[in-house]
Image (cartoon, rainbow, N blue to C red; front, side, top):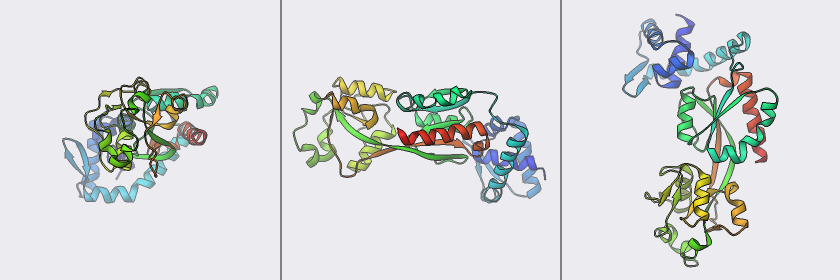
Length: 297
């Protein structure tokens, strides 16, 4: 049995796809297929079920991954350190939501670039960025969604209070005390602004405070939370926003907070990496820097 077969097996297990595994480890897709077939023949067991969606591990595959994953990860880390197979020759690729990167993150990574580290930043939704991370498009992703897939590890980065806000003109359409009595039904006739029909922040607020899902027909959907903020200030509708993004507008009475729940909803941002990549000194350095500076956000 060749060690490379097991390394390829773990890559397929993490990626859920022969093609994506080939991209990650830098070999051809036919070579990945050959490695897995050779390993299955040697063990006398099917390790993956091939489906239109990718490669699903069999019970035997899950057992083998459980027994070998940690050892293979440690071995790959050693190889990276000893042979210099790191990302140091190219800029690190960091992804995150546009508003968080602009308002919080970019101001904190100057120290890293001053030290000679190259960083390429991608701005996208959390779900898209996690898919990019899994496929090797980015090295690290800041996500409002906690990753729950094979091959991705995450560290909680920081918590942000979520606020239900509206302009004073829109808030005037809501009789005093009605929201506390009728809950989300009091909001049904008010237009809503979101940055995506399934975006996690509004959905989390509605589920936490009202124990239901938000309206499925928002008045306006825009792709950037800063645009949601602008629309709310312009009286387009109500919106759920992280507190850091709208504190100034609230202090200047351009926005008002519509309710203050006993248990304020929070959005937890996660710093996600592919399993094993923190063995790369450059990735580890940026990861540690972001975790440290997030305490001051």
